[in-house]
Image (spheres, rainbow, N blue to C red):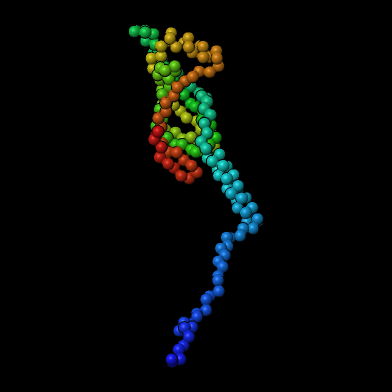
Length: 184
């Protein structure tokens, strides 16, 4: 028998790579970085709240400073009613940061579900954070004296008169140097 080679000679052993351990590291935030992020977030929220408080629209203070009777017309048929026209100067104290320049202003005035009349002004300007005077014409059309006087006296005794208003404005709304067209 011929000399045969052992089986081990036919196979060569390749060295196996050493086992590798994979380690995933997450970013490490020190406590000073976390505190800095919290402080920045808190300051941002406070700043946002302050800006919203300053820019939030506020109701203007309106006071009649002068009025002059223009005309009075009394109707006796079919019921007793009166038409009154009054020239009015109104002081508007605006505490907001918005200004308003208008070319047309019409305010419908109602009382207890009835339309009494309207206030009209052709043009004017209400300054931001200041007082402005606005000239207008107040017209009461067909106010029934007997029906409305009793309710009006009751409301005056209570200390408040609930007028309903509907306003139509054409003009511009201003915030600092920006003017936005307005038609409401």
